[in-house]
Amino acid sequence: MVEGIRSLFQEYATLFDPVSLPEDICRDPDDVKVLGLAVASGANCIVTGDKDLLVLKEWQGVSILTPRAFSDMVHGG
Image 1 (cartoon, rainbow, N blue to C red):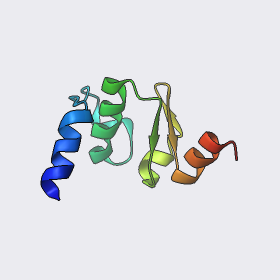
Image 2 (image 1 turned 90 degrees about the horizontal axis):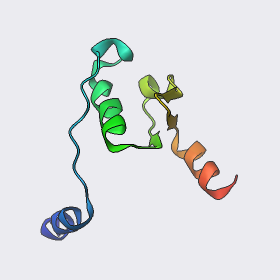
Image 3 (image 1 turned 45 degrees about the horizontal axis):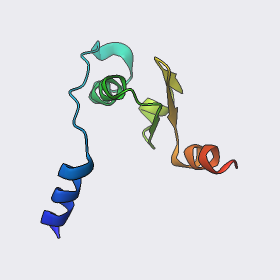
Image 4 (image 1 turned 135 degrees about the vertical axis):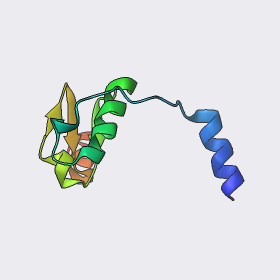
């Protein structure tokens, strides 16, 4: 099973190195990597339940949404 998942990721995933950002851009320094990956990958949004990210609402053009808000956006709710 693990091998199947690994093969799936190897076939369809694109790996990015996060853009280096100042650690003080958000409340939790561990979340800086998430923002750096969003920038590096050209993401439109981050879907998360992490309150330290959600408080930002948007960062450098990347929307930061709860799963519910993302679902509503996608399904027109």
